[in-house]
Amino acid sequence: MPQHAPNTPVCRDCDDFPVVAITTGTRNPDGSRATLHITCRACHGTGHTVRRSALVRAGR
Image (cartoon, rainbow, N blue to C red):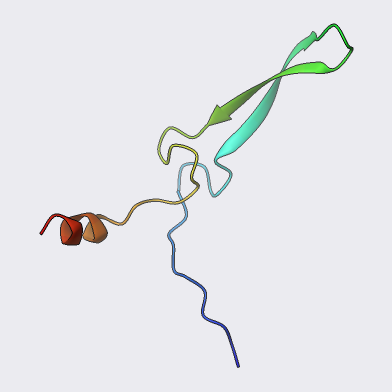
């Protein structure tokens, strides 16, 4: 029997990659690279968009 997957819309700005690590080019004292972790501004790091219909139903 097939299992049902939830239908959660994927953020179209980050395409379900909400957090990325960017190297700065410098190194830490232990020799590892210094990185910045950046989150998507549209979905705030969740990777999914909020359906407007869900917000309207919650406001009733």
